[in-house]
Image 1 (cartoon, helix red, strand yellow):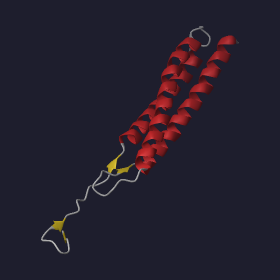
Image 2 (cartoon, helix red, strand yellow):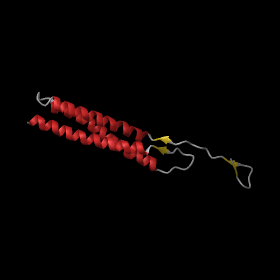
Image 3 (cartoon, helix red, strand yellow):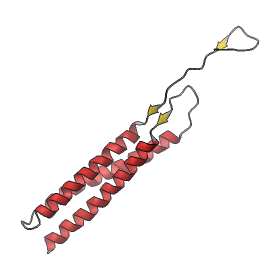
Length: 127
C-alpha cells in the first residue's frame, strides 16, 4: 500500500495473475482434431478406393477436418491478438502465445494433409 502524498488515503495495487487465453487453447485443440481427422481421410480414401466408396467417405471426413483446421487458424489469430493487447494493471492479462502458435501450425498441417489425402482418394477413385 502506498500513501498518497498530502492526503490520509492510501493506494493499493491489486496483483491479478495472468490467464491462459481461451481462443489459444481452443486453437490447439481444433488443430490437433484436424490432424487426427485428416488421418481418417487418408485411411478411408485408401481403404475404399477399390470398392468405389473411398472418395465419398474421405470427402465427408475432409469436410470435417477442413472446418476444424479453419477454426484452428481463426482461433489462433484471435488468441494472438488478444494476448498482444496491452491492458492496464488491474485488468486481466492473457498468456498462451505458444499455444496459439502451436494451434496455427497444427491447423495448417491438418488442412494440408486433408487436401493431399482427399486429392489422393479422388485420384485412386478415378484410376
